[in-house]
Length: 111
Image 1 (cartoon, rainbow, N blue to C red):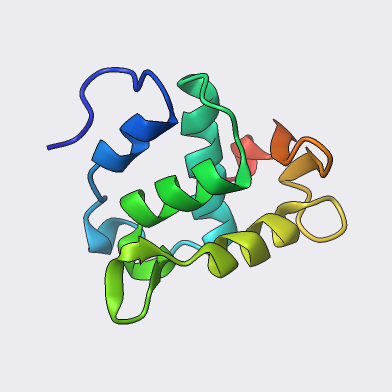
Image 2: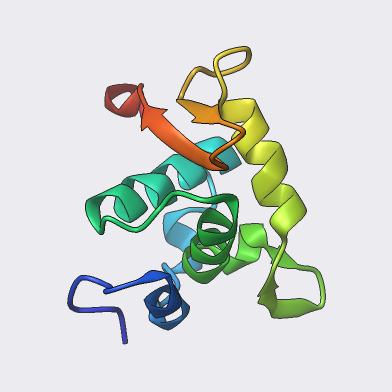
């Protein structure tokens, strides 16, 4: 069952259900991560590396979980994706390394 109400904090991310595999197979990892960051922002949950990693793995387990351990997030996949989203590559997000969050997103209209 999907989270039907707004999560209260980052621990509620563990209750988010996965999207159907066929609904996201053709999307790039950066676009899926932008989707996760967008929801974290809407839910007013900090967009930290850890929160993004957990939500990516919960929503898109085929793309963001460890091989052989589908219940465990592949944090390295999320890390690579966040790096690809920065201005030097795709320009979807900027981040403040000192605060460890993706603070400002752009490009949603192109997603």
